[in-house]
Image (cartoon, rainbow, N blue to C red; front, side, top):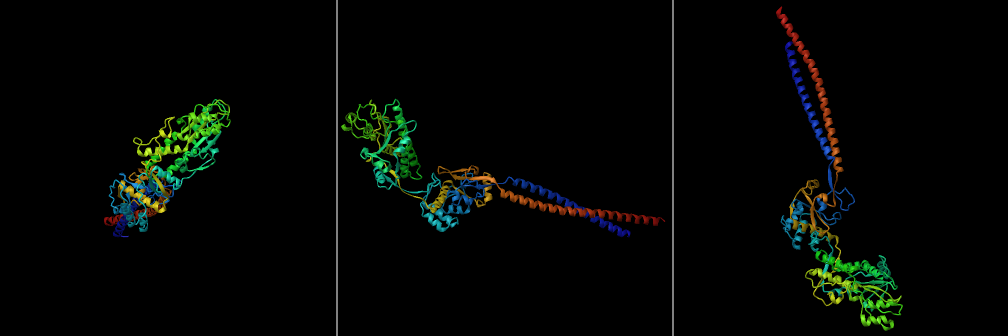
Length: 572
C-alpha cells in the first residue's frame, strides 16, 4: 500500500472510530435516561400503592363497588333514599353540572340564591328547565309539575306523606271521632293483664275492673274501647287493693298507684292523638304534642296522687265490701240495703266519683272489722285525655299567654277547678289531619327535585362543567376544595367533609393499584428491552472500535515504515 493510500485509509479509520465513539457516548446517555425513566416509573408505582377512592354505601353493608359520583348523588333512586346529597364549594353554594345550571338559569335563580323559598311557579320553571337540559323527560316534568310543591323538603322535614288538614273546635273534634272518620284503632284490654301490670314492686291487687259512663254501663269485661268512646263518656280503671288488715296497707296502695303510669293504655292514647294532630312538617305542633305527653305523664306519677276519697268509715256487717267501694269510687250513692257504711257516704261524704279528679285517686278504708277493709285506687282515663288536649292547646297558644291550664295541686284536681277545655269552648281550633296518603314513586322523585330546588334557592349555586368527571370530583373532595351537604335527622342540610358523611367511605383503590402495577410491569419491560438494545449496540460499537484501533495501528505502522524507507533511499 502506498503512502498516500495509507494516509487516506488512516483518515477514514480515524473518522469512523470517532463516529463510533460518539455513538457509544450517545447510547450511554440514552441508558442514563432509561435509568431515570425507570426510577420515575418505580416512584409512580410506589405512590399508586397508597391510592384510594371514595365509595357510596347507603345501606351500610360494607359494599365497596359503588363509586361515589355526581350522578348517583343527584339522581333519585333507592341508593340515596330519594334524598339528594349536594356537592358544595367553600362558600356553601351548590356545585351544579351544566344541565342543572341551565335549569337554575331557566328558573331565574341567581347564583347568590334567593335567600328564601319561592312560589310553586318558579319551581315549575325549574322542572321545565330540567326537561329542556335533558336531566328528565318532558313527560316526567309535566307529571312532577302536577304534584304539590314540597316546599318544606330539606328545610326541616324529609316527610313526603301527603296530608289534608282541617281546623276543628273541640266539639267538632269529638264529632269527628264519634263519626268513625278518625279511624282510631281501639285499645284492646284485658282486666287480668292490667292487674298483672299493676302488680310490681311488691304490690298486690285483688281485682281490676273497667267502668264507663260514670258507672251506668257497669263493669266492662275484657274487650276494647275507642278514643271516641273515652272522649264522649266516662271511662275509669278501678282496682281493689286488699280486704284484710295489714300494717303495710298504705304502702301497698301507693305501690299500686305508682304502677298506673306503666299501663300501655297511655301509649296507645298518645299515639291516637298524634295520628290526627301531628301535621307533617309543622315543628310547632310536634313540640306541642311532646309537651302535652310529658305533662300528662307527670299527672300519672305517684308523686301526684289526688286527694283520698275518705279517711273514715263506720263498721259494717256486710262482708262483701268491694262492690260498695266500687260504687262509692264510681259516684253511685249508697243504698241502705247495701249497708250502713254506704248510707254514711251518701249523707256525709257525697259522691266519690273518679271523674271528679284529674290523675290518680285513692280510697283508704279505715274500718276495723276484719273483712271490710277494701282499699281502692282509680283513675279516669277520660280526664287524662282531656288533660292531654288542654296541655296541647296551652302549648299551641304559648305557655306564657295561654287561656288554658290544668291545676295539678294535690287534692284540688276537680274538673271545676282545672279549667279544662269544655265542650262548648269554640275559641281554640285544632289542626286535624283528615286525610293521609302515601306518596307514589312519582311523588318521591318530585320531592327529590324539590329538595334540590330548595337548596339552590337558599344556598346559591355555581356551575362546574367538570363535576360529572368522577375522578375530578373525588380529587376535589379529598383535597378539601369541595364538600358534601347532607340532610340530617332534623330535616335540614348541613355541609361537611366527605370523611364525616355516613354513607361515604374512603377505601383502597384495588382496581387503580392493579392498573398501576400492570402499567409498571409493561413500561418496565419496554425500558428493559430498550436497554438491552442499547447494550447490544454499544457492544457492537466496542467491537468495531477495537477493530478500528487495531487497523489504525497497523496502517500507522505501514506509513511509518514507508516514510523510513524513503529517507533511507535518499540518504544513499
